[in-house]
Image 1 (cartoon, helix red, strand yellow):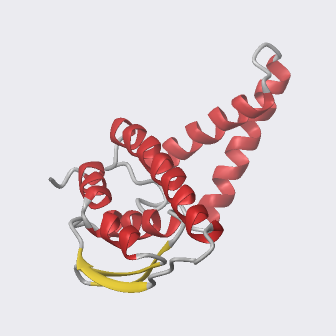
Image 2 (image 1 turned 180 degrees about the vertical axis):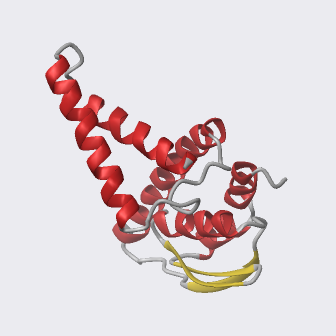
Length: 160
């Protein structure tokens, strides 16, 4: 029930942000109706659960993690651009397997997706507590494996 209420609130908030109509009661009622319709469809498809709405993360840790991930994506983009634009193309591809810090399944998936989102690295295998990463250069793999992103995801899931 709580997931349905949260989804309904998020749907209506999203409708309000995208429509920009706050003063017309008729348009607001259409927004409420469309939000309820989308909720009904989601419940009928059985996609409203704790996996689709991870409440255990919290808004504040997520608000700290998203800018960090954005900066990592920008830094990785610059690193990959340097590799591609250099004359000698200094690729040192490697696959590294390391232990993950996150204990929950959601934390592991967030870590794997975060690594894949950063250009030049791809998470290729998750086994129990280990993750295999393919990187364009050893430096990128070392930075991911060094644990900064791993520590940030552990903070995000609350498992320090």
